[in-house]
Image 1: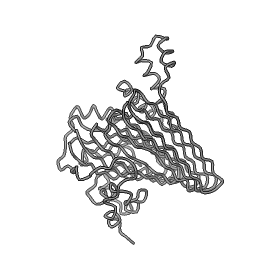
Image 2 (image 1 turned 90 degrees about the vertical axis):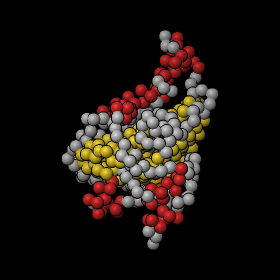
Image 3 (image 1 turned 30 degrees about the horizontal axis):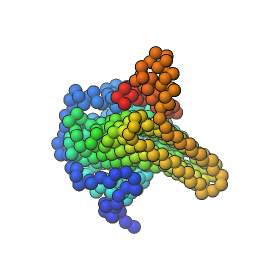
Image 4 (image 1 turned 180 degrees about the horizontal axis):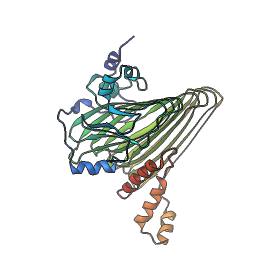
Amino acid sequence: MQTVDERAKEALNKKAPYGEDINIEDYEEPVTTPSVDPGDRERLLDIGIQESGRSGTYMQFDSSVLREETLQEGIEVMSINRALEKYDWLRDYWWKAVQVDQDKYTAYSQLHPVKGYFIRALPGVKSRFPVQSCLYMKGSDILQNVHNIIIAEEGSELDIITGCAVGEKSNRGLHIGISEFYVKKGAKLSFTMIHSWGEDVAVRPRSGAIVEGTFLSNYVNMRPTKSTQMYPVSYVKDNATVRYSTIVVAKEGSNIDVGSRAHLEGKGAKTEMISRGISTGGNAYLRGDIVGKAEGVKGHLECRGLILGEKGMIYSVPELTATLSDVDLSHEAAIGKIAEEEIFYLMSRGLSEEEATSVIVRGFLSVDIKGLPPALDAEIKKIIDSSISSL
């Protein structure tokens, strides 16, 4: 049997099936430790990173771990390197939810020095506040190589908000992020990712989840990004549930290719995928794939796109696959523009054209993310609301 390294070496030139092909050799991994200045703190607040009201914090600038702390008993937050030294059994989770030879990005991650975080809720423990993680790129022409492992042990409840952003002077970079999620029986994990990368940053997350409980995955990208491509996959076991909620805005110059895939492998497994995409001049690919492999599984996929202006493109790709008759899978997709009569109606009520457009866009992006604690739900809505004015 091949080793992990051998499989990775064979995939070093394997292009991803979707998204722009990035030349990894154009970027270098940083060797210095950056500092945190007032401008950085403002950007961290924009992506939900706070000084209080958290059960733990992990903060990484470029390739340097600046902060790793646990603030609640039964919740573990630490760098992945420290976790691998502390727990021999953690190697059993390494590359189990994501394939190391998936493409050149996963292969690179395995064969080069990596940082990242380990977050775990012990059996029966419920996080009182969200755990926060921050992956921040401050340098220029750099590569950030991250591998994260998140475990919600049996009967636990774990809420995580992760913010990704760049510094004011960071003008070019590549982020490779491997994230593996393990949600045990009776556990519930909500993971909310806020992307605020730069206009010349390429982003290549690779995520996988093995779910025996309930997994809520929420993705929000309201800022310009040169190139983003991600297609997280979940393997859903008996009577388990996975929900994906995706909100993206593709501004001019952005190419965003995102989606979600669920393999309903266990009896009674369920999934729901909700996507909202807006193009203000950029290209947005919104993908969704549900595969029914067991009796009594249910899945629904909903994708809606809105084009603002004369430029830009939205491409919706819903896919359903069933391997037996006793499944219930459905999808709906719609793409359009703001109706003039809606604008005229709101203007007749005293709003300006710009105000009327903002009201309609705000309603379009108002996605009910089920199962989130009220405080975290309010934070996400605040972040989306503050970004609408810049569309």
